[in-house]
Length: 153
Length: 101
Image (cartoon, rainbow over all chains, first blue to last red; front, top):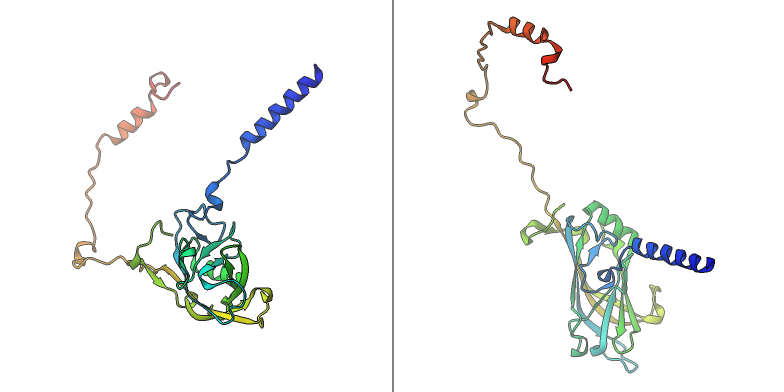
């Protein structure tokens, strides 16, 4: 009898804890959600200071050894602090196998220009991974050193 | 801060924009190694568009400044019963006060 009461009490406590927990946000890890920079500023919906566009052009292989081909190549881009797997893109000369991925991605910047520049300085490098879309195996990496392009304001 | 930015409200930021026409594609196993084996090239373009700074409109004086400058005449009409009215308010008995609870 006493043990039954304890179990009921524990169930009641657990149900209250679950009631207080925030619901799972599906959009947090969804690719269809609006891309926001810097990561963590998603809740500031009315604060859009600007946009960042990243566009992928042609992919040119020099060494095509192995079984992979350019048609199956997709590009994974993830900014520093970005949740999830990042964004998947394709190069403009990719094949139909990866046509569902865009060649350009747009980010909303929800902080001031000065803060965004500091964020990029802290990030320092933006890495793009070229993957084989069939098995997500990493084939190559492109590193953009942003510090070379950021000028002092 | 802006809720929505139209195309004509943004302008490219030179120091945050760049076209990196040919970026070195390093072998995956050499990731992180700046001197890694080059296996290809990738065209990448990054552009940042930020809101144009809005000019603050300075308040301008109207053309006919004489209308706003100079002394304005205000005419005060003396209240003949002001003193008596004041006295009457002060001498009101507490029972007739409307603010009494």
